[in-house]
Image 1 (spheres, helix red, strand yellow):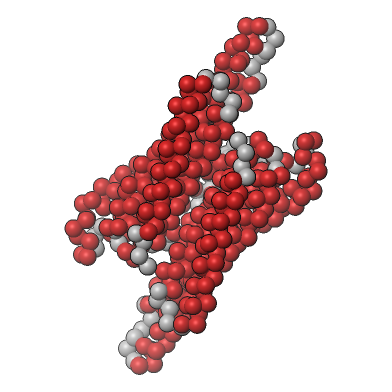
Image 2 (cartoon, helix red, strand yellow; image 1 turned 90 degrees about the vertical axis):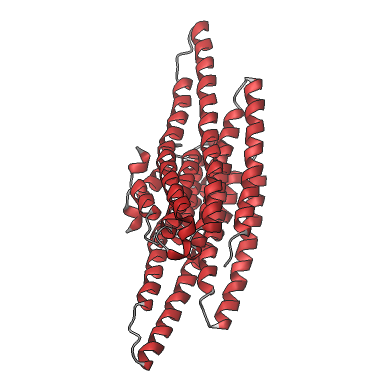
Length: 205
Length: 205
């Protein structure tokens, strides 16, 4: 599992000429990092007299962010695996007509999956921006910049994941799939940028 | 060293109610990740016939990005250490007039350092956007989205680090230091956002 590598070794592996882990895995890592910071702000809010009114809400957010962190850490592998499946499909035999057809289908199926895995990461990271906004506005204000960093890491996770969806869409022949997915990409891109701006405007230093 | 922790354990430590590692360390991590992706795109360009004209340039970029990655991984600790030094200064004795004065000075000095460490991370991440633009424009176009992700991780590193500079500035009494540093912050904020936009506009999918 990539998430159980040492950080410096994981980045060394990223830096190598091996195409995975690449931008898609980094998108998931960025989202997992946003989850960790959100959890930290919530944890730094719980147990403080000044924030007793939001104590239960912050406990809930810490628990939710913790689950998201685990899920997104697993998505680092999921993205790398989906890339490897595309590569494996390209290596299928292509001697007979039947093999050629089967290989084409396998490439298309694997590429669709490689588009949908980061789309799901993008959606998860975007959905998380709701709890990030809450910790920035209602959480411990001594940690408000940590919430701001979480917002930016989440936005970058969304947009980074969507780049990986888009590059896979360029090889997919199913037009209905492409147009439906493109619409989702566009919507998430616009909303992530907008929500990041809104959260950052609420950071009072 | 934080960078030699396993990624999942590092994020678990981030998520805890311990204030470090926090947003400042994550800014450095984000910048180190951008360096790793830049290095990967350069490495995926070297040795390809189609890109023989940029081979030497890409080798140089890979080497530079590798050094930046190591430096920025070390900055993860540097940021956490500077926060701990502020906390240590607050714990100095404050019984006598002299102790009170010494403690005040120590807090101010430590806080200045805690403002300057992320400012340096921001500057390093911003400077790196030059080689990121080069790999996006001239590097292996099969990896262009990895370059796009690097650009976004670098921009988020710059802005995240600067939030940590700004929050420390709010406690610094040296007005000349504050106004000089604020000017640098504003300049880097504007330029990072602008350069990210320019790089992403050059990503052709």
